[in-house]
Image (cartoon, rainbow over all chains, first blue to last red; front, side, top):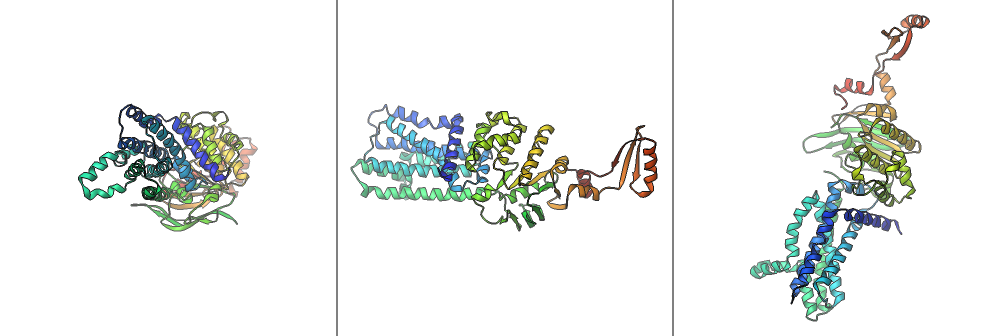
Length: 236
Length: 282
């Protein structure tokens, strides 16, 4: 194992042990599974409903878990210890994202199974879900870095859940206020757009644009998280 | 002479006050250097600047030959150890799990964990969760983390502030051993006993300025009033100027077997600090 892998794996293992003993974070992350279980028992579930659960999973697991993990490190002063170690910013940020990505993947798979969503054109949809997972994890990192405590991160999650989790609501807003049609370029809207096209039998020709937009969102969130992280390395 | 730290006219201004004013000093490689001063003197600010946690407003400092202004990278952090007031461990994890994480980050063998725990007298506490440790034990666990990779340069901010005298003495012994093996130590303290026991040189910091810098023994001699106190077997104490004219008096007490003890009257570092600044070292 190279040194970078050893460091990233060590941070992942540490987070896993830490989160397993943190009931607040671990139980919150189970919410989408419970929601999926109840929705899965309903008849005639529409695509919007599947993606309501998927986007909710991203908000509550990828964003919240990641934000809470990072905010707690700041609250307890342990992040500075990592920053003062030989681990690079990349090793720390990747190491700290691994648990969230794994957690999001498992929760998402379980939620999709429980709600009974049969994925059309699986390679494209899985690629889109993976890219979305990366974006939401980077967003969670950013949120964790700009907040000071887990409680603050929990409060900051509410607008994130509103904007990214409640996709049908954004759809309704766009219908009522056409001037806000740029909201269609949001990653959650692009994901549902892509899913609708795959449902209608579309292929890669229809998929590349939404995939590119989600990738751009990921790149922007990652760049913002990186800038804030490097600023946090020194006190003001 | 080789220096591990070179500070040249460094100042730090926060929004409404000047925390450090033209600091200028050098720490030789292999030295134990003490930064002494009361709370709010600027000790922690200095450590934070030297470990790149704070940017100076003015001046330049070289740490292990590298400028603070540069972006520090991996191998540099490998050569340094830091314990400051904002150091912390993961409370839900055991002491051993915490140190194991840092072994991985510093690319060390796990056998170093036992050695580091021994250095801080915590051999039997490895499996305990950090959150369940007393304040003193947590402080020692954090010291173990700082000792883990036997750094070339170790920054310690009030390292024994939460410790009882027995454990503090154990830490002093470990610090001296580390120093013998080549670790340069920069420590801040307001504990005069700690400074006198450990430090090769001390600097007195007050209101962000170095007031005095020298070896503790030299400072005590410099500020001594050149008198000595003789305690007689009767319990009476006599203070004599340490001059040739008093040799006969001294001889007479000794010839009559009246001397119980003799002490030269050197001030403590605390006394010197008060004399210089008019402030107590608390």
